[in-house]
Structure formats: C-alpha cells, structure tokens
Length: 333
Image 1: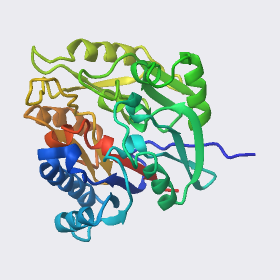
Image 2: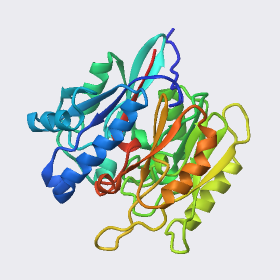
Image 3: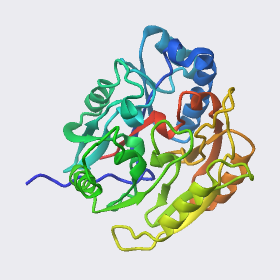
Image 4: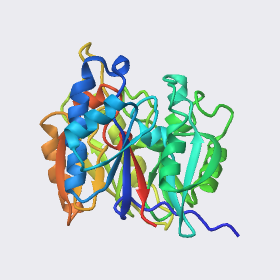
C-alpha cells in the first residue's frame, strides 16, 4: 500500500529552499543587475533567519555573480532553466512514508505565454537534488496556484486552473479530484480571480496565504485608485464563507495591499505583499512602496517567534512575480 502524501505548511521545518538566479539578459534587460541585487537582499534575509538555500545557476557567469554577492552563505549548483520562477517550473515537494515525493504537474508556460528552454528540466533537477521520487500528474498546474494549510486544505483559483489555456474540457469537479489524488488533500477552497496584471492568470500566492491552519491572510485596498479593490473584497467574502478540511470556519486577516503599482508605460503590475517566504526565524515580505510597513504591523502578531523583514522587489516584479514565485520549498523528512 502506497503511503499517503503530506504537504506541510511552510511554517514547518524546511531542509532547503531552492531558487534560480536571474541569468538571461535578453529576458531581464536593464532590470538584470537590479533584480540580482534584490535577490541577494532577499536570500540574505533567509540565511540570517536560519534557512539553508540552494541557488540554481544557469551559467559560469551566474555562479560567479552569486558568489560575488553572497559568498559561501548558500549552496550553488549549475543547472539550466528558462527563468527564475521555480515555484511554477519546479515540483511540489511532499512527504510520503518518510521520503520526499516530487509531484510534477504538466507545465505549459502559464497558458503558452512564455515557453522557455530549460523550464521543463529544472523540476527534474530539483527533484534529483532533493533525492525525491517522482509522481507525474496529468494536469496543467503551477505551484504558485496552490496554497496549503498543512492539514489537508488547498486554496486555488478558478481563473487559473479552469482556464481554457491550461485544462480545456475539464470541469471544476474533475480538476478537484485530480488535485486531491495528486496531493493527498481532502478539501479545495476555490477563489474566483487573482490580481489585475497577473500573467499567471490568478495565482493564489499573490492573493491568499495560510498563516497557520485555520488562519488565512488576504489583502484590502490601499488608496482609492487600487486596481484590485473589488477583487480583494470578493476574495475576503469567499474565504469568510469557506470551511477547511476539518470543517473549521477560517479566521481571515486582511493586510494593506501595495496599492496601484505600474510599470514605465503605466500598465498595472501584480504587486502583492502576500508573496512572502518563511525562514525559521524570519518572514521575508516583498516591498514596493511605503504600504509595506503597514502590512508588516498587521502580520507581525500572527508570526510570534519570527521577525518580519521587508526586502525590495520592484525589479524582480518586472519579470512577473516576487519572492514566493522564485522559491521551491523542500520540507524536512
């Protein structure tokens, strides 16, 4: 009999957090060096917070850049990848029978928007380095579309997983059944839509995160011109009416959003304070403007024993995501 899968909440001990270093100047253009500086700041917060980090580097030049910025504080390995978004191109690492299992969904470049050489291989490299056995799943999905409470509950969005650019012809019930079978979960909470300007089609790690089992965070509008004001309120209502796998009503905590964040052409960017990453002694939250300080004040009481650190992420955001998007958690077994 196959042991059941368990995906711990991210507050549980993680042996390693994997990330990929910005490497391709054709993709990052003028943001390459500033994005690397933001990566170094973010990773340094994790390391100081007691978290081991493995950085996948695409070239010898990338390895040299990592070493120049971070020295020997991280493990660096050479592996090819298309871009840095290993939350999506990498596996979901679960615990099963005292071993790691790498759950690998089909990846199609976020609905065939960005199909890059190496993005199909980096997940195998992460799984191999983790010593995980593979579990391949016939469903198009990305890790950023999945938020776990560690006790059998998953939050995801219809905009992403029911999108015709990912799983055409599958019903919500069929997708839910495949998620339950793939991930060892008992309950799926469906939200409708994600952030404006999000090319991932509504990834949940930008809109709703479990602080702990039974406690979930989402955002509220900052400023009258916040492009996501109605979406934030709809998300809060959906979470307040939901029940988790243990039939609990969720405690919903609302953080101030970054407000209206735009690129140089005035297009709305999917900036979010929700894209935090946990280390044993630290929570690292992306900062885009002064609203981050207020978000930290709201969140701090819920992470006793951890320091809330903010780290700039505007240049990383130019590539489409932030800290949680560029990391893959390897839970301790």
